[in-house]
Image (cartoon, rainbow, N blue to C red):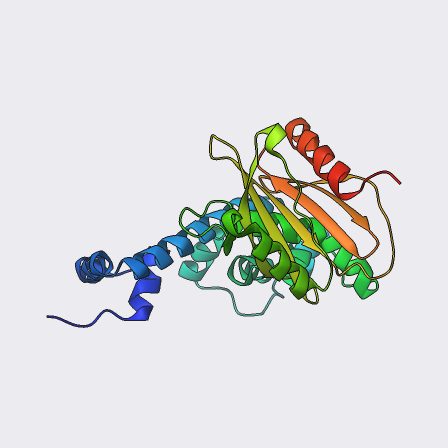
Length: 274
């Protein structure tokens, strides 16, 4: 049977849910369509990065108050033995909370990150944007740093165009730091959605293939300034700070001390002493 391969089957291949009888047809299709293969491999890389970032949160014990709130109310009809057995095999997370966590993996959005961290939607938009900065930066790093073929939209060989393009889109002059003295070369950058508008991501790589990303936002419109702060988001460490409308976050899978050394160099170039 030469049944055409559908997009739904391609997505099932990405998720490991493709029926065995269709595996040969899908793999033959991918062998003949390298663009589809590259796209699906990118999806797999993104899925793996998102799981690495958020799975540790799913492993945390549920706070008692939240577990009690999510517990089902009792009824006068006893549960059937089979249903009770199925419930006994469920994960510790109540269904409502687990669904919210999986939404973060699906949407890769800031709002889901808030839910996973137990944060309430209180505060001004500017305060929310500040608090979300390291989380958004870590998520963007986890999604794009593992990419093999398409880690950036514009490469460092077009640095002038890259900087002009991102500066125009963010409405502010940008200046990617030079980190060659620390062993990292600019690989390129891309435009990303932020809290309320576009943000920029610059990517750096060392000779061993390790990558760092610098996330630059201009959404901090309240004129606030902060010193260095550190956040650990899953396996990604983030040093971040705010200067006026600019928010900067350097992300990487380095230990804290090594990442701090690079962050200090970035800070020195972006925030020169007056």
